[in-house]
Amino acid sequence: MGRPYILNPIEKAPRKEIEELQLKRLKHTVRWAYERVPMYKRKLDEAGVSPDDIRSLDDVRKLPFTYKDDLRQTYPYGAFAVPLSEVVEIHASSGTTGKPTVVGYTKKDLDNWSELMARSFAAAGVTKEDIVYIALGYHWFTGGLGFHYGAQRLGALAVPAGTGFTKRHVQMIKDLGATVLGAVPNYALRLAEVALEMGVDPAKDTKVRTGVFGAEMWSEELRKRINELWDMDSYDIYGMSELYGPGTAMECHHHDGLHVWEDHYLIEVVDPKTGEPLEPEEEGVLVVTPLTHEAFPLLRYWTNDLTFIYDARSCDCGRTMRRIARIKGRADDMLIINGVNVFPSVVEEVLLSHPLVGNQYQIIVEKEGELDRMYVVVESKRRLTEQEKEALAKELEENLREALIIRPRVRVVDPGEIPRVEGGKAKRVIDKRPKT
Ligand SMILES: [Zn+2]
Image (cartoon, rainbow, N blue to C red):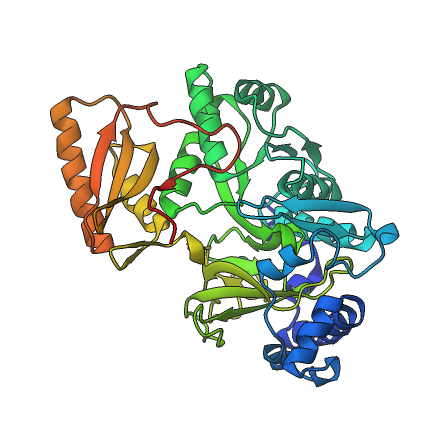
C-alpha cells in the first residue's frame, strides 16, 4: 500500500515554511475581518488592537476571542465579510439554545474545504478507487456535503446517502460494494446493529474497510467495538460548521492525535477560565483562527472543545503539521455532580471496556433534595439473569467509582431496551436537574 497518502506537499513542509505562510495569512485575515465585518472592527477597537499590531504568530494573543454568542448576535448575515452575491452556499449549525449560526461560503471557500476534506480522506488511505458511502445529514448540517466534496475532489465515488432508512442503507452498502463509510460514530454502530438483525454481517458481507467518523465524542473503547463489528480501520475527523465543517484536523494511519491543517488554521489551546495560553500537552479549550476563510472569517474562535496540542512536532507519517489530542468533550458537556467534575467520555470508556456490556448506555442526573444523583443505565451484550445483572451492575459501579471518584448507581437492562437514534447524534446524557 502506498502509505502515507500525503496529498499536498505542504502537509510535510518544514515548520519554518508553514509558519511563514501562517503569518502572512494571519495578517491578511485580521485586516479582512477588521475592514469588512463591523463586529470585528468594534471588538478590536475596544481592545485597542489594530491589524498593524500583528507582526508575529504570537501576536494573535492580542486579539479578543470570538464566542458562539457573538455569532448569534449577528444572525443571520451580520458576520459575513463579502456581499451575498459572492456567497454560493450557506449552512447552519443547530441551535439547541437560541438562534442557529449561519455560515457562508464563497467559491474559493468551497474549493478550500473540498481540498481539506480530500486531504483528510487521503490521510485515511482513501483513493479514487473507493466508493464512499456518506450516511450523514445533507441539509443544514455540514457533514454530508463536506464529505461529498472531499470524496469527489479525490476522484472517489461519493454516495449521497444521508441518514434515516437504516435498513435501506445496510442493503445499499452491501449491494453497491461501498468501501468507505462516513457517519457519526454512533450511527456506524447502529448500522452494524441493524445489519446483524437483518442477517448481514458487516465484517463479512460488506466491503467497507475504512470508517471516517466525527461530529460527536467517541471513546477509544467505542472505536474498538466499531472496528470489530465492521472489520474496519476507523479514523477520527475534527471540525465544526463555523470552521467550514469537518476537515479542520484528521488522524493519520498511526491513530495518535489529529493533524491540524495548519496552512488553513492557526490553533491555540487556552485555559478555560482565564483564556491564557497553555503549554503543549496541557489540556484546555481549543481556539481556532481560520487563515483562508473569505465569506465567514473568525478571529480566535472559542470552540469550547477540550484537547491539548502535542509537544512532538513530527509524526512517523511524515507530516509536520502539529497534532491535537482527540476531543475529550465540550467544556459544557462536563457534568458537575455534587462538586465533582464528570466527563461522559470517561463513563463511556469504563463501561465499554467491560466485555459483558453492550453498546448502548445512558447517563441520567437528577436532584434528590440538595444532592445530585447520577444513574447509569446500560445494556448487557446478551440477555442476563437477574442475578447476573445485579453482579454486573455492582462491578460497573465499582469501576466507575475508581475512575470518577463518585459512585453512580448502575442499572443493567436487556439488549435493545434503550431507545436508538436513527442517524443523528446519540443522546447519552439526560440532565433532569433544574437549570440555575
Ligand atoms: Zn501522522
